[in-house]
Length: 49
Image (cartoon, rainbow, N blue to C red; front, side, top):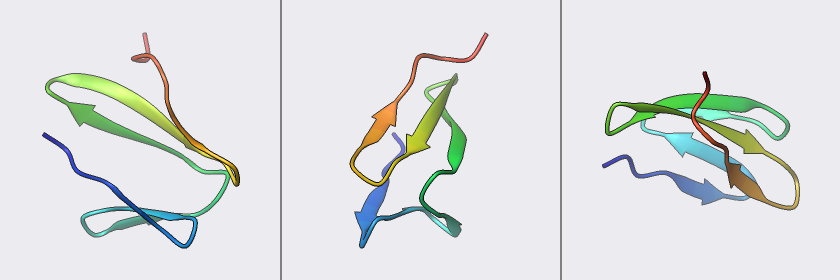
């Protein structure tokens, strides 16, 4: 399981810090997910092809 934290509009994966507007790809149970960081919301997108 991958835990992520949103703190003051910054999403942190362990030691990875991404700013607003970035897209972070991570492996979740073997599936690659794209997480888009927007000012109003954080979306988990469908796995990339």
